[in-house]
Length: 236
Length: 193
Image (cartoon, rainbow over all chains, first blue to last red):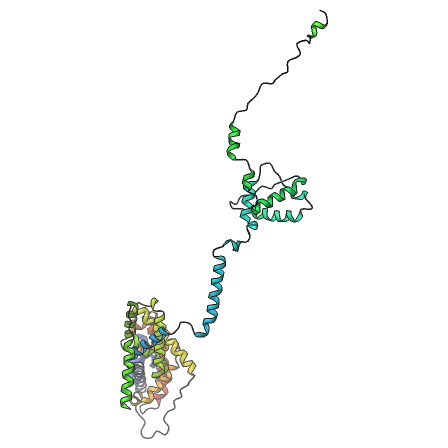
């Protein structure tokens, strides 16, 4: 009898994990083989012992008043400060710093954005609203106003992508008028001059455009009555 | 001595009674505590094999559960969550303890060799089984432990582990096979071996 073949199946048979075909073969073999039958019985006894030990090990009794002690521990946890003592200093310092920042910037959010004269939207609005028609400013014609030009250009670049996203037209001026225009521009930016007040009121322009033109007759000075007509001088 | 013990017990009981759960969430938690205490303690004991350590770990698991209870009010979800947390806490405690239990067979046995049945029911064998279980991979060990707890069928074990029943079945087969292989040498030394 080939018992070696069946020895490998004994453990699986004991834990009932052998496939049905092999289970039948093994049962047929152990009917005639006393050695394999005894071995299979030992395996089954071992597994029963393991299962019993497992159940005994796993089903220990809960200590008395366990739930009560858990509740006491939870109450202690709730009563304890949520931060340890040594953590209060950095937390308090951080909270104070945050409060100071909010107090400084909170009522004056513009501080975060910088001075009014440097705000791109203020410059853009001044350029778009207050630019008189037909005035052209050309930066390349002014050499002694270089710093003013660079500042103006920076402002115009930022104003170029202004509030409404459309381009602001460049302004060209005569070189002799450059200094005056830059001073006016700065005055409008800083708010010292109200640019809107420099422009003609739109209503006047509209009404002027609609008013019909008055054409007066040409006044011709009367000739002197003593002057003779030309054909009388010729004696005819 | 006896009087002192009684006074201690009285003080402890009064302290516990003073803790009142006074909101619906806390009443729910108290219910979960009552339902799951035995399970949690058994999981912890299954790892640590020591009642004091197991109780400490079990208490810690419930404290953690209390902090997260707003997410765990559904009973099955709570049980599965607390089993996992207890297992992890117990394994961490075991590793921190760093203790290796060494068990040696009683030396100088005299008399006739015991039978397989006698061996399988002895205290010695119990310790051998526990040692063998402790050496199983974690997944097999936890599955074996949960399945062995009374009242747990395949479906309950699968729900606690968050795996299909087929997975539980195959893990149990593998775990028992490994234990049998590891402990076979005991059976071979018996009278009918």
